Image (cartoon, rainbow, N blue to C red):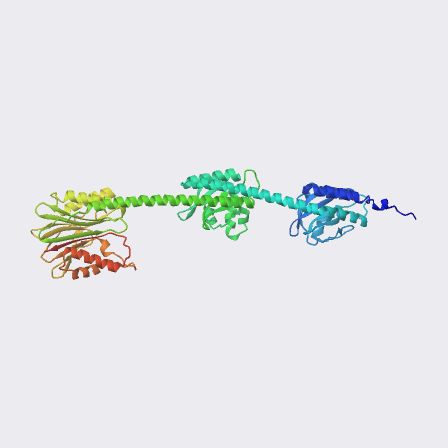
Length: 577
């Protein structure tokens, strides 16, 4: 027996040199595709086999084919579930029966040996090797070599997988950054616009430019209904009906996913016929204020989760701007109305007497108490020749500038007609016809007016539908002044107005008022009522006119208890001395 020399014992084995070279090759790269191809081709070349594949774990028990040779292109990107894969090689030689779904895939593609790819994280993949050209089984030395090759490449595979994951993460971050940048720029554009139609137009441009959608419908919730306000779709009647149901959608959804929910199945069928592929709610504080219905992408493909998230954010930015535009318009309208009310108040106050005339033998007082809103209350006292005086009180229907202008119209007519040689019924009929011709019956005026002869102390009057004035006699008996006719402005005069007459005696008090007095409400919504007013006036008989006005006002304030009133209150008191 010869003795091996020291130099012979120290020389590396010829089998190890290729393994070192192989290890250097696979571990010098972070290209996963290159590493897997190298592993697969090296094993196939060493073992002299014509087919093989590499699968990597995707998640859980799911594995995807990432490299393959000799098995056809249709296998690429296939994903299969493998439940029973352990950490040892599995031989599939001479298998005649099914080993379960886990292995049937490999048997179908004539794999004879399954080698797990192990890293510190566990089994990250599996190498499948087909039959040798010689049809022999894999020997123990074959298995050892295959295991060595796979083990040497495992760390390289793990490293490359991590690098690929980082690349995917970086691409995702880049995409998110671009999306956030786009949303930021679009939000600036949206916020510069205070017109909802322009915001909708910007939104539709963004759908085309950012996602590539040229078939869409944008819906907004208006007056209690979801309405299509911009559309590039065929607007079928069923689509308009569908959007009412879709107002309940809280999250962005594909039409196919909607079809799986029972409450949206019928709607999803309508959407599918209209080629709607996605529904995106537009929300403000978790309330759906609008919808985007989107057709297919121009470049094809379905909407991804990232697409839906981006569109949801885009829609919410747009709907916030639309809501801001609506609130801005409402503020402008409110300011316009306030300005109109200010003008109406100025008109109304300008029409009321600034100073009451002194009437010999009589005590006269009047007041107009404004509510928050501008009403159409009116009163007037004016001189006529022969020591006669016109006393008038009226109430125009409605509020604001129209009511104030109509009140001005009535005042002008009364001041023009009263001095003329018309009887009071004739003058009242003329005022009624003028009012009707100006308003065509959609506005009306209650009016009480009388002519007082200060010397004879008699009063002629016409009551055109106004609250009946109280005449409190000196003995505290009460009369109501009711003679007259219909409200002014409701229709042309057909039946002549009637003139009433009464004689006033010392100690008598006449109280004229508008319905804001008798209908003043407390916090329970209950009216002050004419009955309560009559009781107060009986107690005040004999008081000065100004005191009567003040005391009645106090009684109403006490009854209302601070409740805001929606109507003006006007009172005119004439007391005979």
